[in-house]
Image 1: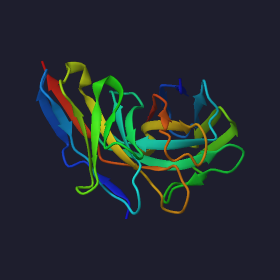
Image 2: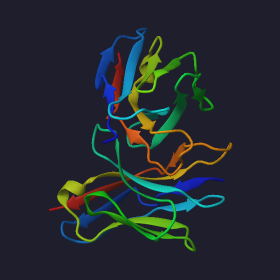
Image 3: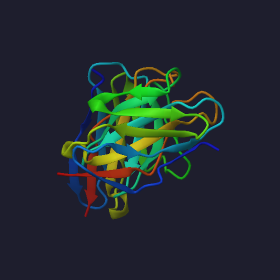
Image 4: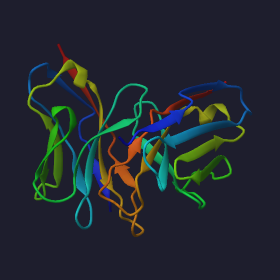
Length: 118
Length: 116
């Protein structure tokens, strides 16, 4: 149980393109989803917390107009990298929580999206 | 301040030998601690957690971790390493700054290399 699907796995596109990444909880309802960015050989950097039906909460230093997050349903959150540039190239990972406030529950992670901007 | 430290960038161990991946934490209040494993080009997989109760926590794939409050540590262990255990391991602590939250603070990760 607690499967999170992330799509696509790999994206290669030209500079200036907008890219949408989907994160779906397949067998549970996720009131909260998280979006992370991971640089090579580094830890995960939390970008934003996405709550179903409300605006995402962005971490300090993350441009909300650059990284648009939508959490329209209890099973889907999307991250759109707008007008992507080479410096946006990275590994993006989402995770989902069964329900808000249950701090003893683990986050369940998708398999990540490798984004390469040419 | 909430933080978690993984002092070793890499741990090398021979197959069949016991392994330990170290983690220390700094939190105010009772810590919620987690271990995750990441294989190349994949997301993180949950291994185990400590919330309360027994200090020795058993998790997936034969891994266990020991919570030590006096040493503020939560080391990951396995009695007999497998080559397939080779991966990147992350320790994490729940971030309680700003009130009720389920955010995690991750360590920098430890690469475990198990030699055949």
